Amino acid sequence: MSILYVLGVALALTMDAFAVAVGLSLSRDGLRGAQSLRLAFLFGLFQFVMPIAGWAAGQTVIKFITDYDHWVAAGLLVFVGGKMIAESFHKEEEIERKAADVTKGFPLILLSVATSLDALAVGLSFGALRVPILLPAAVIGLVCFTVTMAGTKIGPFLGKLAGKWAEIAGGIVLLLIAVKILADHL
Image 1: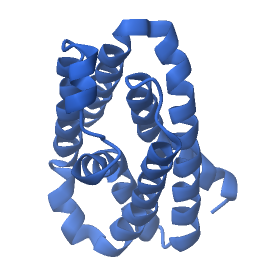
Image 2: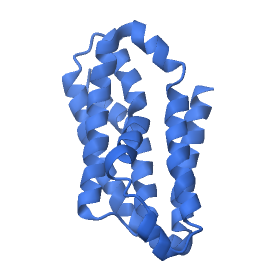
Image 3: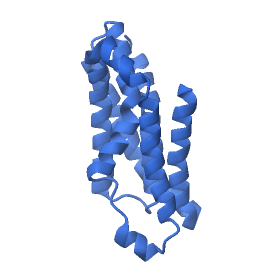
Image 4: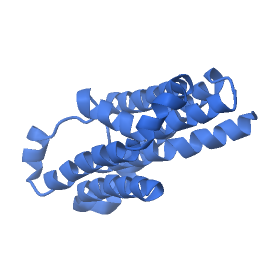
């Protein structure tokens, strides 16, 4: 399997993570360095691990997952995006006091899972093709890390353009990703 093919797959798998990174940094006047690094690291880690898990899972397990993986991913994105939109209607001071850092803990795990479920299926297909998985998984993880970091840097620029509507726009981006996931699977 050529490196160009693997890079193409990696870029395709990373687009959801990129959009989430832009959406999160758009709504918060940018993420601090540690937040960007946590987000990119965990997104990249999940994008690395999920193809390996898919490759190892085989046909039996994937049959159960593919029936509802898109619902899980969409539901997680709707939850986070809806919360962002709801918070946009509160005073800024109240948001700063109450808003959870989505680059920590359970919210970060949810976003990491939601943006990497497609990588599980890719891993299964690589296994069916008898392609060794470690190099493609490493490339996918590194590309995701890099693209996610870029997304967190682009978001603040777009946020300045959007002004007070930035948090709503960030939530809408996540909702649109959820709709795209459902549309692709229905």
